Amino acid sequence: MLREIADLGFTHAELSHGIRIVLLPGVIRAVEEGVIKISSTHNFCPLPTGITQSAPNLFEPSVKDHREHEQWLRHTKRSLDFAAQMKSRVLVMHLGSVKFLWFNPAGKLKAFVRNNPTVTVPDDKAYRAVLKKGCEKLRLKMGPYWQQVQASIEEVRGYAVERGVKLGFENREKFEELPLDDDFDSLIGGLAQPHTAGYWHDTGHADIKQSMGMLEHRLHLEKNAPRLLGFHLHDVTADGKDHQPIGAGRIDFNMISSFWRPEHLLTLELSPRVKTEDIVESKQRIEALIEARFGA
Image (tube, rainbow, N blue to C red; front, side):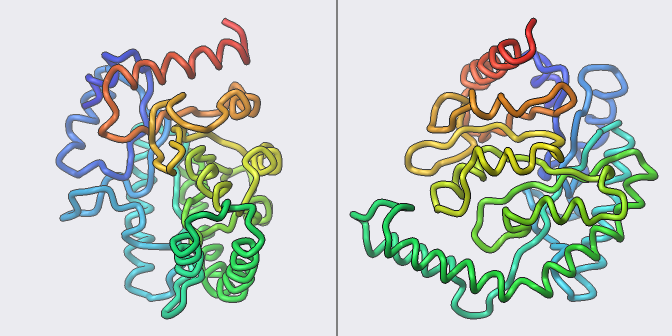
């Protein structure tokens, strides 16, 4: 797997939340033999025993249930151990979600769009009224979940510091997922040691949220730029399909690249269905933007 990535011209890779335990010997060997370096890893990596497909939300730090929390804590620490072994600089993390037993506001948003196919989202006045009410309901409901997230982070932050790995909190694409997009700065700034964690920007997720009317991509990056650690780079088609090749969709990567800094990690996060030639072309497009931004 890593040899194939290296043969495409990549010097570094991110180990995702789809790495099964049976792959670890080969991964470790590839790193030890200098085939490739690991820039970042993604919780949970490796996957818990018995899980055979990507499962970053298998256990959530927002859940108060003692058994699930213990599993989240155990596997996050295990991921940090492996990240340190691979000399990964960042462990990218999802931070859970707000649970609605009934009447999730996201359902009302989807129903509105489905029942009003001719309206222009997100600018339609009626849509924005539904969105505003949904966001208010989400804020009212999130308190206990958000408190649990912050407590969970503190449980692993010191463990990460000891292993020389920063925690990267990723922006999410679903309505009810945490953090809410306005809360990254206060979350990270409120840590006992803010420099031990940072913001991880996913271009596709931000674009999807922008299409929902929940943020403005550029303004969101401007707000979180001081705490940026890295990027997941992928495009989004006009119909909202993400993890597409760079240049195949609607995202303005010239704008995205204006926020890059030399210390940032840039990861192409493309669908497994993307063709090899499109991966190579995406790499070339990003390299051209890097050269334009920083010079040869």
